[in-house]
Image (cartoon, rainbow, N blue to C red; front, side):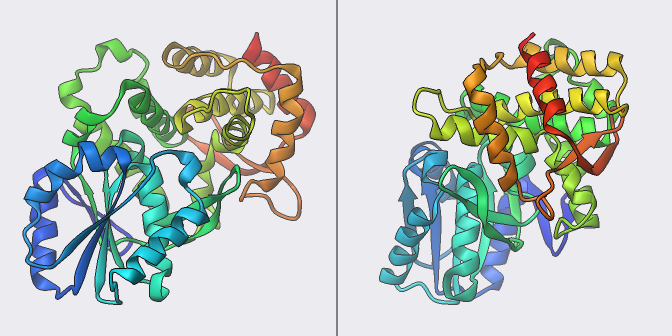
Length: 355
């Protein structure tokens, strides 16, 4: 697969990724290398990665506990302290080896340590390959509020090795698949159509689907790196999806949802809203709802859940002047940003989802 050129950094794939990494290490005099992992990637991915690294520079491994609940400023402080204790300086390199939590948090740590040191992303989950590691967004959650603290700062490179997916549970694969579905819905109807019959997908060709997903996200981000305009399209399903994810994260009697599970619900809800606003026809809505519900379990919402979820919408990062802004699909494969939606319509969407 050919390298994809993003804004000021390349995205390399499979064998080419390690050639590019080792060439970079040979051509740059780093004082030290720090590999940030979580407990999962330390066990399942690091043993495969380390033998591929060709360098005489001292390497230190920094591990933190896996899970979205650890994607917070407290974990960052711990890692900044470890970097300081181990003598990291402005000529150090950080390599983030892991899923979206690792790349989001590790990129933020590197971007802020000593006002910024070099970092490289090596995503190991489907979600981080097609979404989290691409686009330069780095950050952490503020309590249960998703990605409230962060910066937009690009890595030196992103290295995508799809062999790491062999270490990923099926639930995590489905979580990443949600972002791929989103890319089709907002940008490429032909790509979306490939997912209408998952049983027919030849998984030998799954690399090509991943590649196209990365390509779509990069094409959007390249037009609008700082999310002033068309990059907001990537938030389809996320306005309600993030609120649902945050609510389930903070509510003890609820089972925490994976990111993609929440976004899948968000895409159905926001597709219903698009239909009601005349942007999407009923046949396309039924197709979207049927496809997503064939992949993801239906989430149960009680009456008492809805108001707290609506209250969380005010924290969505797209909001301007107190108005909640949605990115809604305009047919399959197109998007309309900055759409105001009244609460009554959101409530109707939840009722339809539950029906």
